[in-house]
Image (cartoon, rainbow, N blue to C red; front, side):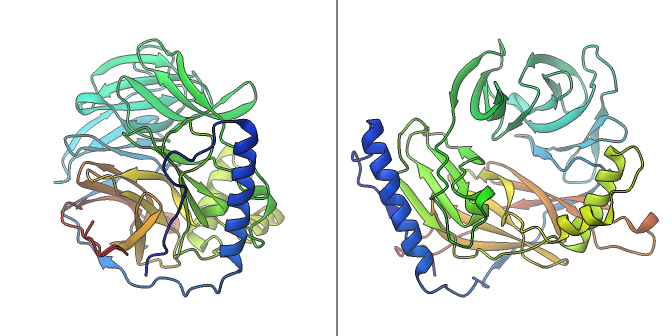
Length: 382
């Protein structure tokens, strides 16, 4: 049963600093009120999806995936310092890039995103650059970006994401042609915007969001307990917010613990992290959602979750802050991306005896989500 969103009436969002503070205080009181209501049972209903294509993917320490407008999926092979692209038939379209500082070369590829006209964009954190390629490997161009930067959407004439400037993380819009900053915003940090059970370091921090075509911005708060919607990304206060009815406090699975140990060992030059570090990671409450938020062709937000299931994975779907329903996909989800009505899912396949050193094979699944329908709380199909 979807939980109704709380909405501010149109035109009432405060514009002055004083009214913004008063509105945030009111929003805090509302959030605390909701937290005190009887908790609903976790939503267990879901819509199972069947893939329309699949492929193997290289093992990598990088968990990002991008799907182009032509339906080609690309991932980073962090160990070979290359980009791997494949279509839904399993045909590899490109395997390109190499270590270096020249044109089309990487010092340390860190993220990948959909580019314009079927291209793919690759972020090089060490060089503070973004490189554009065709999925066959043809190098197109590069532009500068902050060294610490994570994109929140596809690349067009500009790129939106989170980046560090002057020691602070901000939402940024970067002009692709020049590398200049067109827009920046640090959303309000309020330690009072929290559920009593939410840890202080996660309280009220509107960090991970996704821009919408109509200049809106959807953000997550309190480890995924709340969705917050700004009708315009420059508004002083949110227009809607809602508690997420599927939210559950969860902790890292053994697969995630093993992945943490492997990554920490690699970064530590082959030295395994101390047992105390591993136990701290194991007992740390996780974010309920797996970023990033992705929008489909109908403007619905798809957010992967961390339900405890090694065989299947689950993705919540929202219309702004209204929960619509949940879909189920196969295997252990790492990350998703969506282009129009095609969703790709990067997964760990089930561990088999043939997997070396007990490390599961990675794969990519394609799903057609054009026919996915939910019945909203208002009786409409979305």
